[in-house]
Image (cartoon, rainbow, N blue to C red; front, top):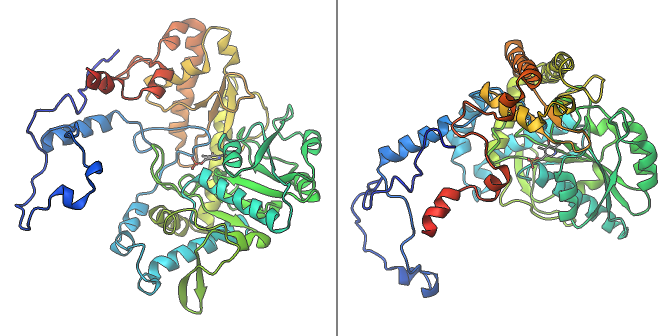
Length: 489
Ligand SMILES: *Cc1c(COP(=O)(O)O)cnc(C)c1O
């Protein structure tokens, strides 16, 4: 299975070899037992790799070449918005005044950083149509949880203790029901109709005096705009519930429509998606949450505020749900988002949406000749195809995803949303050229032809990667199998 065996860093170990050199100790050596209680001092040396600086450099450089990233190739992973992150963001985030501030500095000494946070809050308020914004949450799911905790606190402050149900459509991102559960609320699923949009009749059946909120992604994860959003808002507000907008993929509506104007009370944004923070692989994210007026008292504290010409951290918020993140959020990602918003300007942000939607529709229409299109209507930033036609030939969405690797493309999201058979969810994003889109379309067309003529090529893919087909479940459960085997010996 391993075509080019890359040794593990542990296998490169030569006892005694070290990759660093420190100056000679010029202070008295402290003994560990003076610093730590006896029971915390390890009895055995840790098993660490022993390699030279050059070995370690080559090792990680070799590994990095095996990575697929937005900077190395097309990455149409639906719902993840793997678009290009402009490098000016990195330059600005490295300004010493941003990179070297300490989170415990007095507000008076970090006015520039606070001003950036305050300004970013203002921009996000304008972009979402909300009345106030917190920058604290560290990711989209964290923003969801923060928003739901505020909704919960709001209902509790009104003595509405029985509002424990969060209505989530069956096409929602998996984090939505998970966040509701972690927030101590219960999820109720509402069905989508045959048109891919929330079934209003089903919605009416599940709402009631126990409804805390409806959580909605719009456009939904099928890439379709929920056209009946005002009716939905009336139904939910009519029973005293709040409307939560999952704005992780705002590049579909940016500068065209605002959650606040659609009637939403809470929205989270994924700055690491729409606003170009590098993401994937679990790097830091940022999931600010915007709220309408009646939820402002419950925002996490502190909030960055402006008094006269001075920027301050406001801790005097008695109804706040508290702090949701140490310090003030992932500041570096917020700097990147701010840089992006300022360098794009209002016209640039409008173009983002137009190209995201145009690119997705172009690709959808061209691929619809070769793959089934379950919802035949204009999409927004992404669309879903079904490989059910190919499945009859013995080729599944998983096989197509693997075959795309041979063409140098990251596969789309597959088997999600669950309500589409053999689903492939494709998000080309706005930053790709027509040539790149055409290249991917050509590869998909070729794969569709292979499925008809030589299905085994697709079934056995990938053929050109370092490692061929993995046992997916084993890879997820035991990502470092070889090392575990070795250390068990
Ligand atoms: C990505 C995404 C999320 C989760 O965001 P994280 O930052 O990964 O926690 C939630 N909802 C939707 C629609 C998303 O696309």
